Length: 193
Image (cartoon, rainbow, N blue to C red; front, side, top):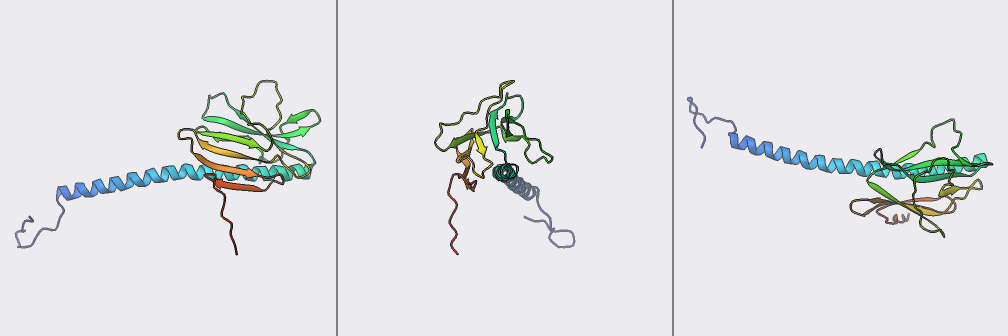
């Protein structure tokens, strides 16, 4: 019940209970929005990484064609001392074997994959690929090879959430280097004009 002021008018203010209710609602809405934005930010970051890997594979294929030398991507496990579980190293085939390419630009720098993501690489007509730690003084060949003739090892790379086991993204490519990005492993819809 509102009290009348000395002039006979009703006071126009909020009670303490009404103010607390409004503050509670605002806090709840802010919490929900921040949770959604937080997970959305991780999804955007992951989507950007998948697109970056796709673009870099296409770039390396073009570089292989232009230079007349094979390029490759070697994905390996880290020692676990940082927040990165897997890394990707770009390699170039020289007469002595595979080695890091000599680059003027920084396009083919080492890739860092998220720690809470598991990667699965499947290459056509080859056994499943295991990502092993790099041993000192070894020179392993890359798993994905981009040939100077304009072809590449066909296959697909899956990004899987380690906690839930859910497939988040699949990047598929064919012999000619055509990339297909598939969120949650779903084929993109065909657009008919």
